Image (tube, rainbow, N blue to C red):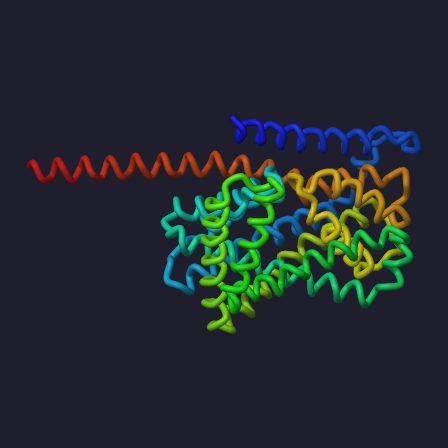
Length: 356
């Protein structure tokens, strides 16, 4: 019952965020005709936004495919993309993106990948993405720090908090690989404190779950550390994937015919927005992404069009993943049903041959 309530609340939150974005886009009194403005978007730049969406998805899927092929699994790139999109879908509809990795692992299991290797695939992707987004954000921020400070003003602390939280995850992951016992002792201490504060109900279950997660991270990172070439490939895929995600704003900006802000400054704000909203424990960082966009791009995108720019940007960076994700979930069920039918026909034919 609680799980159903959580799903309902997540759905309502997603629907609410969509309604809010549409309301912001079409209720601007400074804009005479929103539909005309949308219809005037330059098609080649809109195609560029879609290309960014595709790059974000494809390189994330490609990295998992490369890793699984390297350990001996002959997974097709199509099934890797399917599992990736299902993971994105559940990440975007569950609080703190908690459902993405488990559902991606489950999708890979259905494709014939053992749960252990599916879990390691998701873990390695998460660690490399976390490392890549932290380093790329820091580089862009340092190279454009004056512009970022001018653009964000007294709200710059939001980005600083986000960078610290995202960066803190990197040494924790490394410690999970090389200081496994120390991390577990710390985690157990935190759990016991949670029990005293009545934030954790079942101490034994929480410790068992934490131990299992740490074992998985430890094994995945230790294996990856012994393969420097694979590390480079995974980090490169993460950089290309994140480049697509963060680069979407450049094409949105030019699709509306705006000029004056170079690509690297647009990318800088995009990274700062991402890290500022990423620690928000809401499905798809709903609310934080929308509010952050309006705040961070206020002096870059004209006020009469910023709502429409938000709508287009959010569609390609969030809503499109929901739409395609639903299709992939249904398609996977169709594929599995077809595979079961083929298996039954094959077994039936074998039985008939044996009887004959």
